[in-house]
Image (tube, rainbow, N blue to C red; front, top):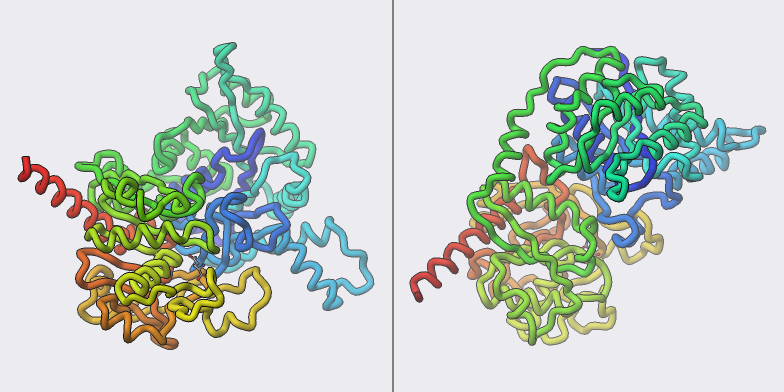
Length: 546
Ligand code: GLN
């Protein structure tokens, strides 16, 4: 294995949303499957210090790492593909870069000097890129640069890549440029011009792409690949087609067929072998050949946006494959659920997940949904806000505490069954101040979760400010909702379950962040299994009736 870390930069051209993250993750998978230690990093050109304060409408889900970084959702793909945790160092934004340079300036580290984009900002970027490489833990670091070349925001990053390639030497740093080859249906033709232009734009900043990955809806004919190679200064075998796939989990194999891993390793002067992706392929096979189908309702307030609950949707794919069942997700907007239509909206479902979230909008619908599934024995998983809603519903409708609420939505409530965590009370800054990252949780003997996790103690990732109010614990437990997972140090209630119900679990943490292809999350696997059982029972009951 090499002693110097090699760097691969992934840039994007023509348009955003081409799937750089998936290409980076797929390449990383193929390299990892040849024995290389690989990690992926995302550089985001926006000025927010992290995406933690961004609305999901802006930027999709906020992903959380073990060490409590609030990051871009692409890090979720990296972890799901590679089955390796990422960290603070794996996501860097322009805001973070500037914050750190300005702090250094205030400390006097540049004393006497004018602080400038080049070299100070670019030096900071270069340092951040190399942190992972210098840790000695990786043979290859893939750095994905967010945005599209030509954007004003991306310029310092592209300049840093130019400098780094020079510093590192030719075969230690390469650039993969991801572009679009559109199909013009009126002309019946695939067009290379946008790609030519974006490669040219990259060159204007002094960066020559080594490899082109071309997103396309149709197969790229040989002549077209030759043309792209000729006009864009790359070898013909470095023009890689990335055709639309029915699932992102097909992309590693598509890239393998195109030889992306081979050409990358050749350019980095590293040995290539045949990647061992048997386990991956077993998963893909199970995912594509389900034996039955179930429908799970995802109840949230951002359901119209696919990216808002990315990790939850992916966790269902992993858990579905594990159970050999297709999990059809029906997204249901909580704002439009009420007591009168809840049966109509949820009656046909095999399981219901109430999603995480913040703020007042749509919470009544969530509470109505929980009541319905609790009373009708439909499998239920509540995540974070979803768990908090389950506690509120139970307090209101089983314990009869009619004004039970969370102080997040109702600060004046006389019965705050969910309240602000003690150490949050003095916090005023919004960014990076929630209870974040991995915390331990002890599982009660005899509980469902203990059985599901097959462990006494677990760690899971968090992102919240409010918690189950311990003052109500005794009352709530006596009525049948048990606190079955507790933080060993603070006693914070991490899990509630209703033992009487066939499958009713609420968790304060986010299990979805830890689900990977190689390690589907046990809670999702068990939830899907319970929903499958419910579906079967329902079917046999109707059959018996007929
Ligand atoms: N808004 C709730 C809290 O801060 C739940 C957060 C979440 O669902 N991630 O505790």
